[in-house]
Image 1 (cartoon, rainbow, N blue to C red):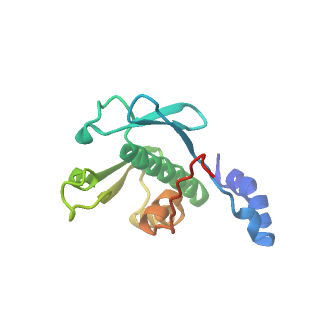
Image 2 (image 1 turned 90 degrees about the horizontal axis):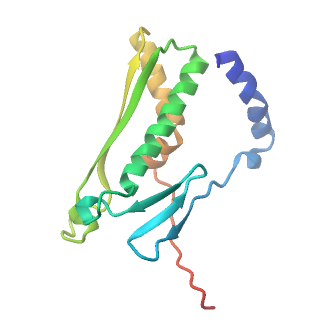
Image 3 (image 1 turned 30 degrees about the vertical axis):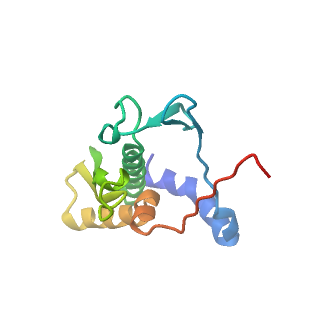
Length: 171
């Protein structure tokens, strides 16, 4: 896909969203089922069923997906797609590359061992290794726009309000 194809694909959507801003708001959903026999949650991804469980650092067997890894994988996926879309729109000469993310967790927090240890990532690092001859100012523009338009990156950088509700079958 080239820049012209991308603009043609997105132009009607942009026009629609400008004229009817509410039509741009889409509620994405995820769903999982709690495992009856173990400490796991089976998450429906739309493509497959992923069984998430405890990380080995919290006593898990290491055979199930770790939700922390899944968060980093979502960041890599979103950032990679966003970078490719931005590169296409900018007609940025990109021969290939890789995207990686790593995050530091202190498992004392999630296990309740130390009240001063955070529950969650202390830091997350996102990295692109690109095969390109583009000049530094174009790379800086690609970086800035990728960061600006990556949904998962922006959600992690500026978290939205969250809520948690537990419902039971009892009225």
